Amino acid sequence: MSDEEHHFESKADAGASKTYPQQAGTIRKNGYIVIKNRPCKVVEVSTSKTGKHGHAKCHFVGIDIFTGKKLEDIVPSSHNCDVPHVNRTDYQLIDISEDGFVSLLTESGGTKDDLRLPTDENLLSQLVLISIWVKQIKDGFAEGKDLVVSVMSSMGEEQICALKDIGPK
Image (tube, rainbow, N blue to C red; front, side, top):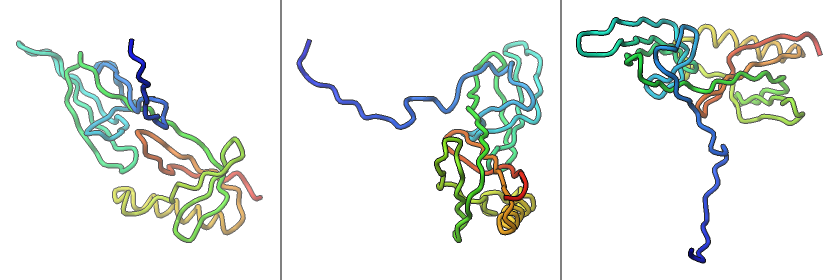
């Protein structure tokens, strides 16, 4: 063997994959799937019969969980699809900065300061809903209410997706 030392660059995510494979025929409505490199919630699945020369095909219609855009894909039912790891975490809201960044309290007692209130440019299709949420978050915070926000994360992206009022401070 050689006496050379080997150096490896470390990755912050410890090698964890952002997706896992799942057979297309087993993916159901309300599950998740990656379509065009975007994490999507499946809203419709239809399966065609096998043809004379081929496989049964699954037609997936999904809604991007971050942008709300409708995406579609057709995959042979025996082939594997990428399914995103989707996590939803609740944080207590501590502060909202002038530039729209929120300060959130983690379970361990630390703060998470790298998340911004959803912006209208990111979510044009959900414009009304998001502007109502942002207004509720800002108004509730100004009134001194204890607010908990749900943060959805998948494939390296995070976004506030829900709001709960847990009463006055």
